[in-house]
Each structure stands twice: as C-alpha cells, then as structure tokens.
Length: 289
Image (cartoon, rainbow, N blue to C red; front, side, top):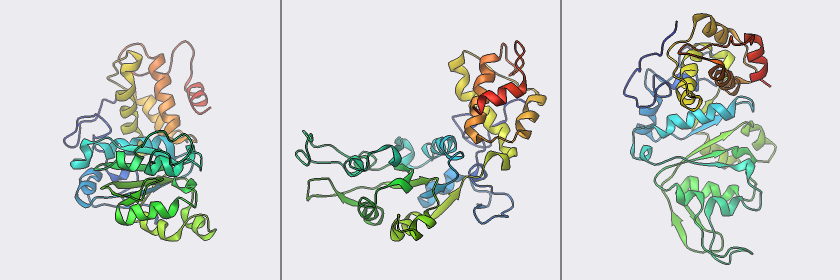
C-alpha cells in the first residue's frame, strides 16, 4: 500500500505544500528542453518570496486549467507579505471586450450608461497582493497599452477619471496561446509581451511527469475526501501503477476526475475503483469524457 508522503518542509496543507518543488510546474531535474527550468534545490515559494517572481505560465489548452488552479494554490501559500492576502483572478477570455477595461481598472460614476456609482477595478482590489490574468492572449488590443503602463509603473486611471491611482501588485499571466506568434501576427503588443515574459514557466503534459502522479493523487484525495464523507489512508500499489502508466490525454483534469470517481466508489480507508463491476478501463474512459 502507498501511504501519504511525509511533508518535505513546513506545510499546512497536505500534498500541495508537501514537496511541490518547481519541478511540479516545470521539471527541475535534467534540463533537456528549453521550456523547462531548473532551480537548484530551491522551493518555488521561497524563491518567489525572495525575488518577487512574476511568471508567465503557458501550456496547451488541455493542460492548463487544472494545473493553473494548483499553481495558484502554491502562490497563495508563498511565505511573504503577499501570501496573507488572497490571489485575485481574472479570466480575460470570459469578459466581453467592451467590459475588460472597466473590470480591470474600475470606473467612475457616469463614465458610461449604467455606471451609477464609482467602482474599484481588479487591480485596486489586488493592491498589496497578486493578480492572475488568465488567458491574457485574449486581451483586446485597445486595453493592452493600459496594462503595459500598469506593468511598468504600477499606475493607471479609472475609466472616466483623470486621477492617477498607484498600486503595488504582482502580475502573473497565463495563456494557452503562443504569445511570440501572436506578436508576429500583430495581435499582441511586443513591448507588453517582453515585460510579461520575465520568467516563463511551461506546463508540461501529465504524461511527461509520471513521477508527480502519486503526489497529485494524494493532493486530490486530501482536498476532496471530506466532501464525499471519506477518509482515505491507503492507495493500492496496483492502482497507483495503473495511474502512473496511463497516457492522460485529459492531463490533470482527467486525473482529478478519476480520483473523484474512485472516492465515490470507495467503501473504507483504501482507495479502490473496483466496485459493482466497475473496471479500471471504465474509470478512465468516464473521467476523460
């Protein structure tokens, strides 16, 4: 049986903070590809707190959502003055192009039809903390110059106001697009790209990180078991081996779905997928659907 791994340092949330070194998001063993980074034995949270790290996270569409969610949890646990405040998240792709500017930078009363009162934008809310701009490749071109000013100087103006507001915000950007190609196609500002691309972090697919699967399995068990009314203490070797050898076309999202379904099927303290005729193949096929 595989039991939960002991933490590798001071942690308060099992699995996420138990040894999630930078290799979790970008392999730190042997650097064989340019998109992978090695940070000599340092934990990501320690490095980030010390140098005010602001990464640009990139990966394929099927890789990103669940992995970025876990990446956020690491960032929220950073032992620094910013770690005490919750991360502010903005999905640029989910906002209509006409509302992006007011959502990010706020607006004054009367700035546009329906603006009945002055409202702070996400950057003001994130002052002293961190803001994650997810799907930044979808940001409208007309908003990019204003974002560039915030990145460079920390200053902006609310929509409908001439008063300059200054904030202290760490900006983390995430995208499933190749921003270099977007720059070449004139769909993304080159100067904004270079300002954001200080510390690029590529999220490799789960099939290339089989050694991380046991850690992720225990993370999802720890996070989800209470909601299913379960207490899992063991994972059979056979099950863990099957998880490590699976191709994972759905990446981390698929793994999370597999663990959630296994929690539903489990009766007792040992995680199982064998319940009332449910096979491992059926678990995988359902989870990846």
